[in-house]
Image (cartoon, rainbow, N blue to C red; front, top):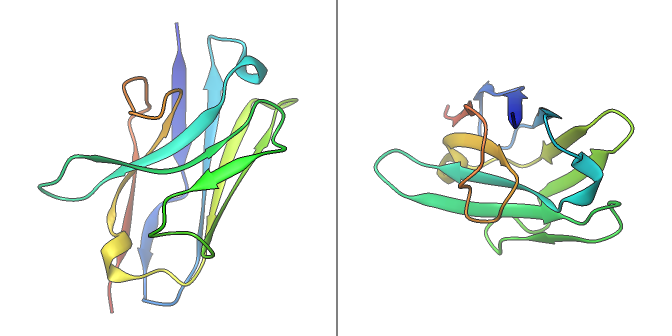
Length: 115
């Protein structure tokens, strides 16, 4: 079955950086666009970023554009999200997802941005 396992979250001060990683299994990873989505406390799922099958194309929500970078390694079935200049409003549970709405996603990794 589809399995997505995220890691790399933590507590970071505003302006800091974190790198999230996701390991995928149970499906042909290279055949799917892949996404990061997030859910802040008391809010719904928010799309953050997506990357094309081979990694040549990517897209970002306006709120993270210029600060976050998505990447993938199809040989290792991994998806990463480099997050720089983090802000308190980036605090959320971050999920690796196989669709933009986050319907098929992992268990999430918590990112907390606070001084």
